[in-house]
Length: 485
Image 1 (cartoon, rainbow, N blue to C red):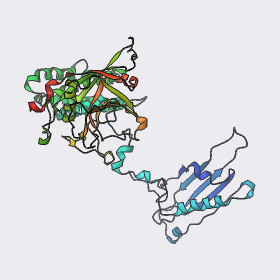
Image 2 (image 1 turned 45 degrees about the vertical axis):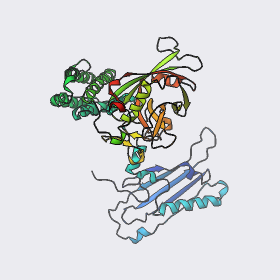
Image 3 (image 1 turned 90 degrees about the vertical axis):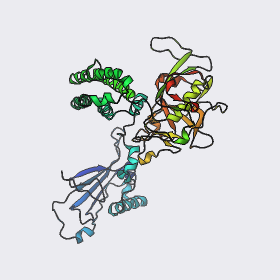
Image 4 (image 1 turned 180 degrees about the vertical axis):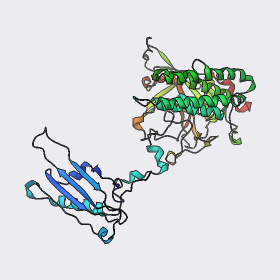
């Protein structure tokens, strides 16, 4: 398709007549009841304009009911001739002014200056001030693009972080695209969804041997059962395909969640340990070689109660479940898990600060000052002692921009290290983030897990509330201590 030619003076003016509306502040330069007509020929020989007509009309309503906002109308008309033979004409810029209905029949000096400035801006080869945002560099685009597909839930972020078989990752990507398609209001693209599920089914069937071969022999029987459930089980891909054909968005949503849960279970079987070797200098730290689950029991510091669950009663305590991701942050999760098993967080007080609930910083606890640890998206091992530059397109596998993300605070000594003990729950709020929905602190902290149960009590936690107990309920076998190395 042939692209329309654009004007270097007005980037939005092309070979077709167009109408544009200038901001309100241009209108304020003229009296309330006036009309201005400007006509000129652009000074660019390569653009084939016959003339350009500007009509500025400002009217002052006689009553409040008929009042209209000020408006400037700019119309660009293309030349009827394909080529301009006399290039000298292009260098001349004839202009004419027609000022009528001026208040008291006069124009103030500042109005004349405003007209001159507008003409100077129109005829100048310099770009219009404030229009440079139309050429955002690709490096910065990630900050401003509403299409930036960061995980928005802890479950999604954790699923993407599993280092699994490439076939399983292809199935996962195809299904996760349906999650975005379901958000489209009214007429949903069921045809595209059906294509995604058929693609996932084909990968699953054709790659069966590869998928099962990636599972350790002692877990292969369980993996085979999960595989059958994924393909033709009650909550599998065949059932999801039927829901899409029936165009039932609720059934599609439920079936999709079930299929993705099965995908995650299979991927976890394929990833029994770390997919990379830790640098030798970091083998002195505790490390977690997979996933673990920690349960934190919270009680109110003032003796009050938490709001009841649906149909329940007031609760003196509430439980938060955190999944630790050792695949992406083995040292940070290892240190946290060791502190939990040592009982270091039992009785710890919490404080509420801007967009975070942070634990007290007890320097008397025996934690390790672990280096800042962040796994960049698309990489196979974490970076240490360095932050990510989101403006350059670097995003972490475990993003902070998720409500309920769990991360370590910075060390008081150096921001290249995390605190040995102090952690926080991040209360992500899109209203306080960049235009792409990315937190301004993204890539600056060691995120090591997410709350997967109990997120609803976070708004009820106040300064002075206490972690009554913290327990490692799953994953103790994956925690490697220095003496066990």
